[in-house]
Length: 115
Length: 118
Image (cartoon, rainbow over the protein chains, first blue to last red):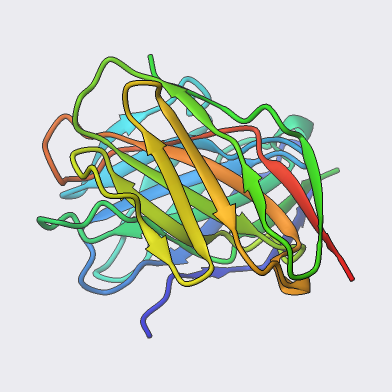
């Protein structure tokens, strides 16, 4: 069964460093998303991406964040200058975007620790 | 703005018994989707069940079923014959798109931590 994959599973970085989180969505899906979950809290939407551009973003997704689909398979989230409060689990998701299906399939997550 | 509320931070149930998790939401939209996701200790997000708002019939997936009350904006999850593997955090989520059936963000509730005891 096709699945969303994410790398790395755990990333440790120093405050102020840039990190890139990588995702490979399901191959025939059209919509891609990033969510984050601070430990013990709910899952929060960051950004959605369709047709090579951002379709929606939350107030969390400020200028420190960017997304990219550099090739036909990868979808990345970049944090330019990490802060302590960026420590969280980051989930990538994708959805078909076709009639009759609104379901989002989640990857296993990347745990980001900012020291 | 849409909101999702789960009023039960923690619940427990004996193995083989039935438990119901509550979820309420607020929206002015008429066409939307509702989901329950399970998050075990591995923190993977696993879809348990989905419900389209335009369908009156409650969704069922094996031991999992929902009670969808559109007028009351309520979407509860019933787990029958609870198993130890059901122990997890359960999140209710609301999905909506300006363009029908096309990509839109999910809004999650705060979660309910379910413990199934032997």
